[in-house]
Length: 566
Image (cartoon, rainbow, N blue to C red):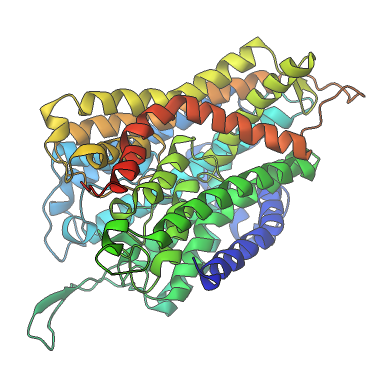
């Protein structure tokens, strides 16, 4: 580890921290319906959309109505993208003449982008037409991110409301998120990425001959517009198969830094948005601090493991960190930082190949996902996942001190705890069960690149990433019919099976009257509460996933010390 490596991480995180308050306060004004600088620009557009769609923006929704609207919108989006991918051969903006996607791959891809996962069993530059990239994948990057944020805002309203029994209006939240939050930042960020060298055109790929005489195709297309929302919406799906490790998607250290800031900005700022809704910003900062401690702990371990390198390589007299699968432009520090941030935010974009990380270096991204991706997490999903753990922490703390658990003045009782536990059980159910099936059947083992514990890690990471709606991969797992279908199912339930108990919990909390604080009220923004929250998350994660992780990365690390690789 080097001082420059640490300085890079510290500076970037300092910028993220500086953005938390202004961006968080801005989002609070947007979703509260207050006037912003962009209101004169987008309010007329909003009105037109509401009139065309016959939406009453003043109509409030109960939790089940909000849930139905969320599921219905996502279902239509799923069908739309599936049809587009199955017919792209016959549609315009396909200068490379790419064929239609196979049914199982179209299913996997459609579910992937609708659920904000962006898992890719294909290389975009060899598979997707420009129309599919723009009207299919990029469009879903906006809408799936907006759905996550809308659900988070609905949950925040439920947990913080004093008198309302409703959660807002899904269609209004979705529209305002796209126009007031995602679109303006994407336009500015996209122009910055074009200036930094990322293509934005409709040209055919350039077929050139290098000085050495090799034929090479230079990828073009509407890349910058996809790249910016890929990071901002914590989507992660790349225009090119190498994702942000490719020079076209991430050409310089400046673009690398900007993309890192984009993927962290909204998840971090939503903690302050929550604090404003709670009428006590200390509540939001407590969540930010808990997330930050877990983020830095993971980065320290991953950076240390990658900087330490491979002991077998050291025995050959080659010293230094593990550079396998990493871009020389970003090195060990930049690759470890990206790997930790992209899995802590449910983004899934990569600037190095996680499959080539050391055993412990690869363990941290996997654990980040398995914990529910609540170390900032995805846009929307991170804050609502964290708040579910807050509910569990408050309940456990109440049992410890012999008091009725309360959060923001609302009593946490049996129904609330049951729904929170149901939410938490979704991830291990759709990670561990499919992983167990995959290692027992020929189809699950047919496309592994490695044997032994590393091969098991490839499978475990894949289902962790799918269920956690992350989308990153160990990149050693090949595509086949079994994985296309099973991972599509895991992505679908990893997203929507959690939203059901979440919004039901929000509906129950919205209907509860807050009681005044007293001398016996447990403070939920103190250092003690932050420690309890982190402890609850780690205990739940350790009890659930440690046995599986022990069979993969941990065993691989131990046998590596004895001179064996896989």
